[in-house]
Amino acid sequence: DAKTTQPPSMDCAEGRAANLPCNHSTISGNEYVYWYRQIHSQGPQYIIHGLKNNETNEMASLIITEDRKSSTLILPHATLRDTAVYYCIVRVGAADMGRRALTFGSGTRLQVQP
Amino acid sequence: GAVVSQHPSWVICKSGTSVKIECRSLDFQATTMFWYRQFPKQSLMLMATSNEGSKATYEQGVEKDKFLINHASLTLSTLTVTSAHPEDSSFYICSARGGAVGGTEAFFGQGTRLTVV
Image (tube, rainbow over all chains, first blue to last red; front, side):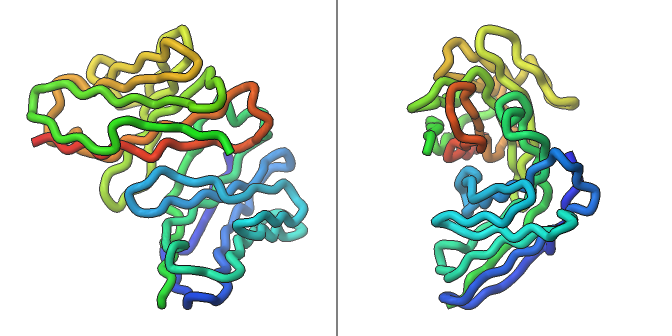
C-alpha cells in the first residue's frame, strides 16, 4: 500500500469547513484513497473513499487531484462532534478489503473549536 | 451500514488472569476479522487476522500463545488475553468486512479498553 503523509494536527472553528490534506505521491493506478476517523475511545469510522473522481456523501467530500498524488477531505460545516483523528489510507482494490487489514498511519488530529 | 459489535467495552482484571473479548458482525457474515491494539496517543497496530474455521495469522512480535483467537462462526471472533500483565493494558479493536456485503469499506467495533492491575 502506498505511504501517506498527513499533518499531525489541525484546528477548525465550529461551523466552518474543515479541509484535511493527505499526500500520497507513490499511489498506484489501482489504489483507492480511503478516509476513516476515530473519535476518542471509539473504533474507527468509515467516512468516504475514491479512486480518481471527486466523491461526496452525507458526511464529507473527497477531492482527489488530477495526478492522484494528493487528496483533501472536506467536512463542510464542522461541529464539535467532528473532533477526532482522521486517517487517510491508500490501498488496492475494494474487493481486497475483506482479505487484508487496513494499515493506519498517525493521522491528523482535528480539533473543532467552539 | 454494517455493524460490528465488541463486548465488553471495558474490563479491569488482575494480573495473571485471562480476559476474553468478543467481536460480532451483527448483520453480515465475516469470513475474515482483524484484531488491532492501540496504546495511548498511538495509532492502531494490527495484531492478527482471524479466519473462520482456520488458525489465525499473527503479526510479527505478537505472541500467539498469549493472544488466543478463535473464529468459530461467520459472525463471531474472540480474542483471549491469557495471563494478562499490566503491559497488556491497551485498547483492543476488531474489524470485519463480510464477503457477501456489497460495500467496500471495513467496519470496526467500538473497542475494548483493557486495564490490568
